[in-house]
View 1: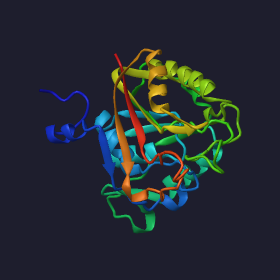
View 2: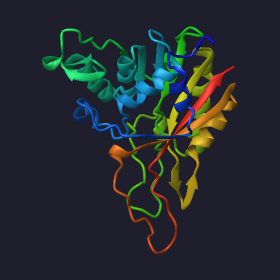
View 3: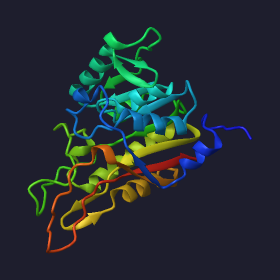
View 4: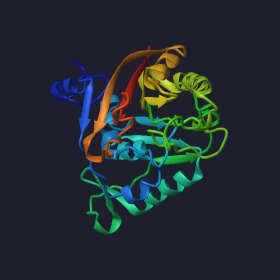
Length: 276
């Protein structure tokens, strides 16, 4: 049977159907630059995701590109990618990385250490508002849309000195992370979903990494909430993988110990939606 989605064999495909996704990706050679963005994802992780949902040479879009984890992952996987990022600071870091590093045998290596066959990093990142930029794209342009949207809404923490997840927003009102509350955030995600559906090729996938939250004394299943909103835009929710990177887990914090149960949220939801 022809594999119409990717270039994996049967056992590799089967592994990817496991809803629990434990990885051990230590910081790579670009980490000292990318870590300025507190919510960046390992390029190795993004390469695995890109490899499942595309074939070599296909074009991937990341509308919330940050410091370029998806774009770097696409380079490692032999795909093309385009990123959109509102914060010019993160765009500058990504452009520094692709200037100073090369892809060499599945790793990102400084130019001075790269071998003769090392490949340059050519995926582009555009500085701008994702909704405005996506509106300029022709319909059915991208083979996959893979992103980690900002979801640290502009609310004050309740009960703790700090939130249980990073808040990496820019102060720009166009930043989804600066939504006044989660209801506004979800409305913005619906606007995003409409554009994503338009520019994605038929039968292909939108993949989002979304962490759940603990807010106002209650667990907030934000991953489920985002997926449910995107269903309204036409996407079919095909499933989720629960991702945990053991190599970079932060120490557990004693929230309300000996008083009541409050979770340390150490996982993220990889939401998998299809345009059908």
